[in-house]
Length: 248
Ligand code: ADP
Image (cartoon, rainbow, N blue to C red; front, side, top):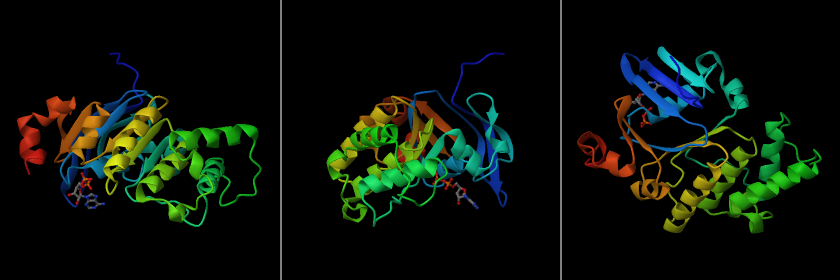
């Protein structure tokens, strides 16, 4: 049997907590360069799926492969991060007392195993990379701003920039637009599409307007497995999705 090369491949993944099936034979595939949206009600298993991909939780059964051959169920969290899987949690965690530039510099150094130092000399290539990230996250003119002074949306973008400094092949993003203004939400859709030109991105969101703006394939989870998958119009018209999620 041959199948197309995938970046991330989950097949029949199940995990129970105290007898409760958080994931129930979940199958999920992400192609290289794909931007995918995940929706679903609370308790659907979205966070658990991310925990399995990043090695925080081990599945009871099932297959989890990265780049077709790497068995993620045999790797720990640090190994998985090193392989090129970055995760952004819902709450932004930036260094408030450092500038935007220094946050990116710290992230770049951290990706090389150099922790908590700004005295590590940046090469011209590193400086160019930070400039490039600043442009991507729309903060070229805010490089000297202290992170504490940024809006909530800008902090989210800065943290995405810090993850980009680690050059992930796959970026997992949890509810990025929660708490953002409408303008920031619209800008985040553009930003994620831009980022997905050079890597794969999986974004969990409840904001259906934002999902529609992304215009990408959507996976709806419920009760630990895939309820529906396809375009936003296809998924949002599925009676099972309306019953379990949208109609609630
Ligand atoms: P979602 O992110 O879609 O809201 P979760 O993955 O957080 O869903 O949760 C799925 C189910 O698994 C929930 O009922 C939750 O209470 C349960 N669950 C998740 N993680 C654990 C855990 N570590 N221990 C016990 N139950 C958990």
